[in-house]
Length: 188
Image 1 (cartoon, helix red, strand yellow):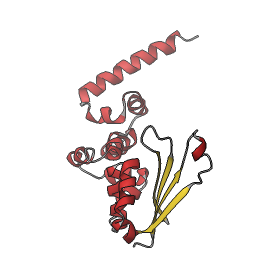
Image 2 (cartoon, rainbow, N blue to C red; image 1 turned 30 degrees about the vertical axis):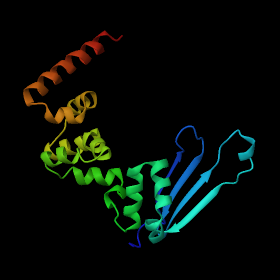
Image 3 (cartoon, helix red, strand yellow; image 1 turned 135 degrees about the horizontal axis):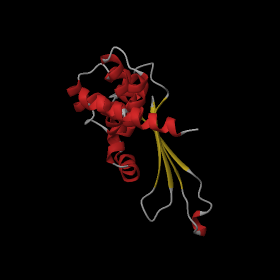
Image 4 (cartoon, helix red, strand yellow; image 1 turned 180 degrees about the vertical axis):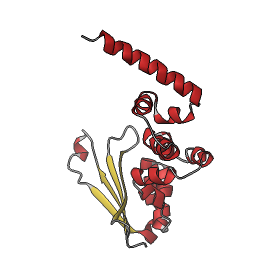
């Protein structure tokens, strides 16, 4: 396993399926999978129940169908598949990169590639639509950005500004100047 990985690879919490109010935690470390539960009940027979914990090394978790079933029941099959991949040493390194670093990388892609990337996951869709990304793209394609253009971008969004043609942009800037020019004249 890669030594630069943090000790905790994945952690999530959840509540059991209705009518259960039980609370669960799933923790995947470099070497083991830890499944914890807390019984939540108003019934007197469960009041003295202590929290439970099951620890398995990765290889044992891959063979423990009961624990895999519990994981799928509480957290869903998507989480189970992700945990199985972690146990098999299949890491999604892109998921571990910060948003700022990903935005910097994405800003070097072609527009078609950005459109395709936005369709791969919710996280990438959010990043590909972010104003921060489109501000970087506009700044890299334009030599200078006037304060008026910057203010317009703040109003309409950097992505919208990027895809607006020059004539529409000039018209928007004129309207903005007239609007704010008239407001300044009316102020005492």
